[in-house]
Image (cartoon, rainbow, N blue to C red; front, side, top):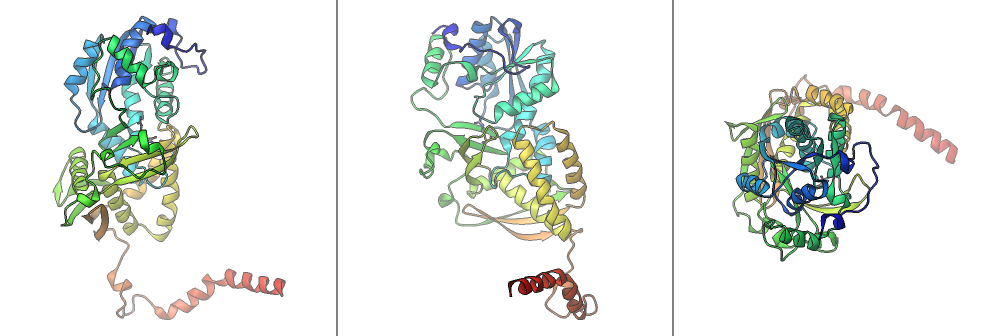
Length: 424
Ligand code: ARG
């Protein structure tokens, strides 16, 4: 197949979309997988452009970056860069998510949604460094990731253009494999079986496609490539103690660790004990409703521990209010608006609340469950002497309670009377 046969005629819809004539040097966000490998070659043919490949390490397990880099060079990239962005991802993206207890749609801890704005920001940096005029990515036209990447590029670098070949080319998986064969592109994992569509990083892993699209189909075992299936998890529970300072996780079982290592080690314990499997129906920002299988061991444990500690140090009013902002934060980030000023304002609130989120939480891991069993904080709004069922002396006046109840229930009592009067 010629490049010309694989492209749909396209007129620009958005200001940042590239006209073919403007494309001279392209920064390609390169994963080493089939789509972006085909793309690396296809862009050179289709646009007669040079390609710089950029691969970003966000802590996705089991990736050999030397191999990815070698493949990019072999396919004709004029430069191939690999960036280890794990520290920045953990510190500037995962930590704010922890402070905001970030979960979208009751189950998704946003690992992909947190990664994309960083990936796109780095694409802008490296595009400028290499004198590229255009950024290319491998997202389809049906997902959230195109929104996150293109919104970031358009916001941070109005001078750069974007191309998203998968959105326009007429190739399905079969045609891509044929194109790869013709062009000497090695296919990782063979071409026989359609794989799940995977995305992963330090904070979690998602699988989409195949039977997952059949809502009636319970998960096949082979989808779980990260977390141990709970039925195979050890018979002995394991309790982990997580330490936080100012809302940031700092220790595991009393040992102080850097963020990346801490997240990895907590994740590993979750993996062993079958913790963090989520079967999620999700409302995408582009309107589609889809199903994702998530494996999010580190996020499950750390988010639970953080939320637990935050509730312990917060007042009833803080604890009633913050979940509303947490939800708004998660929605904004899910929806690709990482650079929206509202997120900055929300983060200021999150930081303020989290100043007192210091202490430890013990979580017991057992066959897929994570249950909080201990909490401790110097800032706990808790006094055992006040809460006890034993007599609390003069600290809490039970004699004052009837007065409180009378006034607290005043409007409810008045309304009840009015209704009874109207009804009768
Ligand atoms: N549904 C999740 C999200 O929208 C995960 C997407 C995974 N991305 C992918 N390209 N497979 O963030």
